[in-house]
Image (cartoon, rainbow, N blue to C red; front, side, top):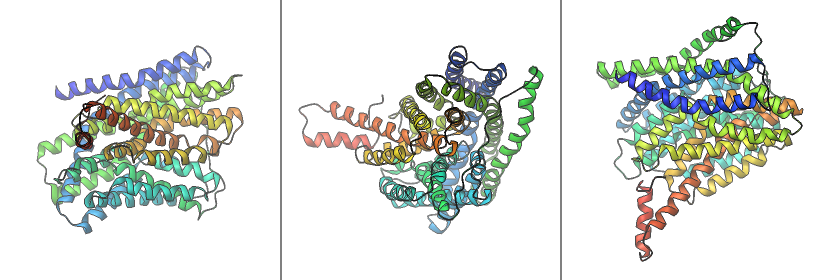
Amino acid sequence: MLYRTRLQEKLDEALQAVLPIIVIVLALSLSIAPMTSGVLLAFLLGGVLLVAGMMFFTLGAELAMEPMGEKVGSKVTQTRKLWLILPVGFFLGALITVSEPDLQVLAGQVQSIPNSVLILSVAGGVGLFLALALLRMLLGVRLRTLLLVFYAMVIALSFVTPADFLAVAFDAGGVTTGPMTVPFILSFGVGISAIRSDSNAHGDSFGLIALCSVGPVLAVLALSLIYRADGALYSPAVVPNYADTVELRRLFTEALPTYLGEIARALLPIMAFFGAFQLVSLRLNRLSLARIGVGLLYTYVGLVVFLTGVNVGFMPAGSYLGKTLASLPYRWVVVPVGMLIGYYIVKAEPAVYVLMRQVEELTSGAVTGAALQRSLSVGVSVSVGLALLRVLTGLSILWFIVPGYVLSLALSFFVPDIFTAIAFDSGGVASGPMTATFLLPLATGATLAVGGNVVTDAFGVVAMVAMTPLIAIQLLGVSFRLRERRRVPLAANADDIEAAIDRLDDYEIIAL
């Protein structure tokens, strides 16, 4: 009965997230962007699977992935042994990254680097930076300091990176923080911070995703200096073509075994690691293990159904829609349409709900999930608009990425550290499978329609989606700080104002 009630709650959340996208695409198909019946029906069936997949995944992550990460993080940190904590962090980061389905897709796009070399390099980058993030938490180093150092390195390397590699390198930071990585690593940080008693412990539990997103970018930028970039391989999404509804059903059922195996390969290493940890150290009771087992089953079913729906139904629709809109006499319309879709599509990213719940819990409701989601929606909307503007104009991604990150890092000096950590975590979380399977095809379809270069113009959408939330959420932090200042009476002295700002850093802030 409890699980049935929880599933109903998750179903309501999934419907609220997906229905706006379906309504927008239906409205476009009936007006300025007509679709073939094959594309539209596949999209609608994909939408049904998307809702079901989100429902199971979000409950599964809550029951299994989060408790697993939290318990492992807490147990490892209790040893107080750096020689154990750092290798475990590196191993976990690399293991989960290799398991991330989106990384396999990215590897297939870069023909000048062997898939195994790219995957292992990116996984090594994530593992190294997860270990650095753990070391930061244990030593109490400010996140802002590390972000300034590493993003300075990213910007410096980007100016000597071949153009064909640039967008792929920045996209790497987004695809490695997907539905497998985010719940586990976020909870891993919570478990580590739980054993600390200082006032900054909760705030330091955020920032792991932020640093783990930098590692892949640096790894691919470094690889571009070793391997010659002769371009990237791109295979356009296949437009569904079938004679009847039975053939439509076969489109999905034939793809299902692929994702059954893919998600099994992704989950098995994590399950094996947790199982070994349980035998050696955790020793959880049967009830806890049963709960985690049910959660893993929900996670598996949810991800399989979700990825089948978005890859078979949403990807062709995104490509077809982008090509149709960019072929109109007023092709600029693709920019506002993309911004509207971007505003709502972030709500359909499974990992976003994991981040929202953790932010609310760890800030005792001071930063509400609704406020965080609105900021993410605005940020992603702007990023999609800028990405499609690149498609129409052919501007280099550096014109957007460099000023964007400079502004993001500058804002970190004016907001509480907690907002900086949440903002940089949110960038990786927002750029999940929905971005890769709908927004990226939308951009590639538009690029093909205007005769642009897919590799240099369309790729980079993931990177743009990962960047703008950094600005949007820190602006949310600025507004919170200003609200807190206004809350202090005009007669208050300077000490009162400073005390109010200190409370802001301890989450004593007014929720939107």
